[in-house]
Amino acid sequence: MPKTQVIYATMTGHSRKYAQAIAKARNVVPEDVKTDPRAVNVDTLFVVGGIYGGAESKKLVSYLQGDHVKNVKKAVLVTSSTRGAARQAKAREVLEAKGVSVVDEKLLPGSFLFLNRGRPNEADLKAAADYARKIK
Image (cartoon, rainbow, N blue to C red):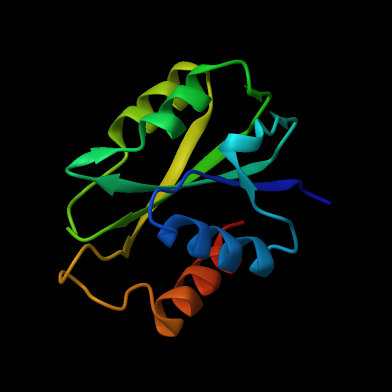
């Protein structure tokens, strides 16, 4: 059976919620990069992170730059942001430099102060889980 792993970094809790929904859909346990998980011999690695003040999580990028990701076939970036156009460009760059194919990136709504208040909501979490089930 293909091995899936879900890792995340969060400052607001949004990425953790998305990671939990994705992990449940894929029958795995999500892992916070603070716990220093190892992604070794993984078929599909979901990398869940947010955009904070226009920049992606430094903690997540630093984790990916380290010696934590080995023999990962493909990665999917899942990005929580109040702005629909934000991407995890540095995470993609780091993964691809390590030979990991980034096959897709899903943008999901986050919130900050009064922007997108109440997000992610149940519909957002369901959308994340449905998306995760579609990734082969």
